[in-house]
Image 1 (cartoon, rainbow, N blue to C red):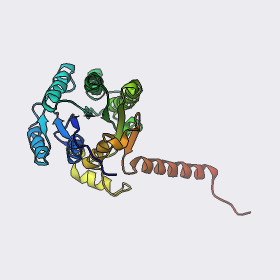
Image 2: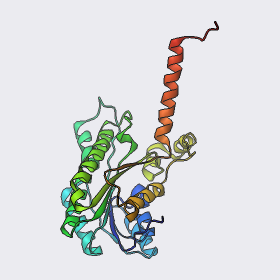
Image 3: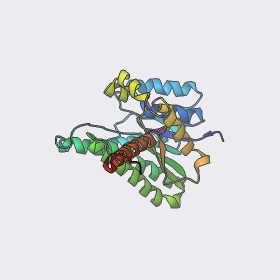
Length: 275
């Protein structure tokens, strides 16, 4: 079944680049009008709006720092004023500060939780209130991470924030059942984004991609297509779900870990002997 979002109006946060931009494009290709949010200083936001408009969809920039509650209120209000309503929210804010647990400063930990978990609460609550006020129905999609499940070192705050985001989203899904608002989560694996390239460099990413099951990193469009599906009528009976979109990355890690356990077990048993 092709995803059809004709007549739907969406709000996507962090939409000027990376996964947010992939989601905005996918929603627009499926027929949705899109309000694109990012930081006011993000120059590419205007380019993203122009690109969506070129697809024949209505597009509007709603700049604002969604780490801040008052800014979230303005973003939702401007999106509703520009599009008439919000049927779909893709909540994609994040803040990551890497560092050893013993060295991580309290303010760094709190900043990551505020930018990744609290921001998701603020924008989703305000959008859901709008959906309820106009009679219910709608789709909330949270962008999480495989780091909600995998305890990567040097990522204490981010891992905790994404794990909390997953549980928060499922709790929201339970509370919004009476209003027929679907709430789901996407867990991306290793995705090729400008942020990852800035953090690790293109050369390292290419080397690591060769070892992944699909032989490549995921793309922002991979996540966008998943978001468009969860926002569509095809997913009307799906709520409270966590959709893993990682090209088998998590399974690969599990297989490697199993192989290591098997090797360790063989070592403990000692060499095989013939009777």
